[in-house]
Length: 267
Image (cartoon, rainbow, N blue to C red):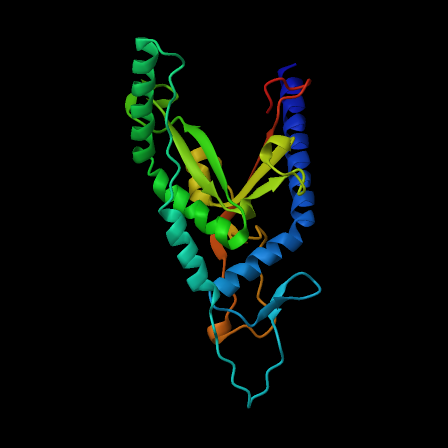
């Protein structure tokens, strides 16, 4: 009986994994043109102006230069982006807490909550996270914040047979647009989406530490999330395409779904 239940659980897990992976690959395929444009933007920012997107949707060096031709690089993109980021860095959203009413207790609670909020802002170094998101937003047109609860952060409270217990803490990370796959590319905001996939290349050592699973590493492109392959074409010298392949990585896919009649709390 136990073996039968265990087998059913394994079949369900395998089916769920296959479904999530198939969903991710479909979303990745639909977004390929956007990713190529983002990569092109990044190359222009790095000064690789002699590149373009070919009919296959891949970056390649543009123009067939002759030996007697001299091609110079005129990077007008980087100064503009750096100036915009510098201006935006001086403008920071101010988080505050508004009292629920005019009573003394409400005012004191709001003041205390505001102090906690400011303390958290400084502790997690939200300024650096906002700077990173601003950079991605300027280069690719969008960026995402992921707010999580980290159960392994904060002060250690004790230990159990399952391991150490910590008080936990809030954690905010900036997600580049390459990592976020919505169920619709035409949605205006996340509120109109039914589900979002967060996929990224993670070091196998980090996967084992966090999830307790040992997986084989491979060389993955951290942007396209595909196996790295030898670049074709004539990229080289000052016009080399940005290299984004890293070794000992594995693909981690997370899918978040909104609440529905079948799953009232989402999943």
